[in-house]
Length: 121
Image (cartoon, rainbow, N blue to C red; front, side, top):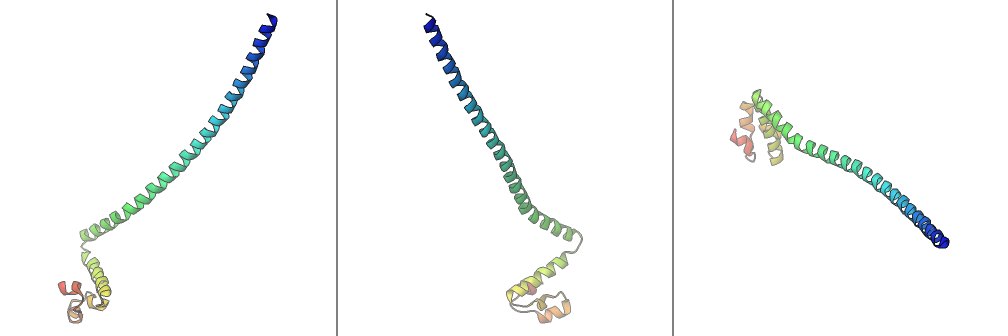
């Protein structure tokens, strides 16, 4: 009977060593997974902030242009912006920027037929 008890103790000791090794292996694996998750959280946070910054700049630029145009209209400076748009349109349509210089007496004489912006004023 002592031999049977001794064998049972040996089996129990072997079993405990196997369980301890598995527990240790699982703890190492859990630590690796935890480190990986921390890295992923930092990376995803950086990506999210980058996307938020890019979208903010992408959306803010047109809003600031609209705000600037509204402020120009409020300050009665809309003629300056209108003349700039006319000159740009004349230059791109082949009429030349001299046809839309804003000088009302000379611009009527120098307007080109190809400049639709000049003909409307």
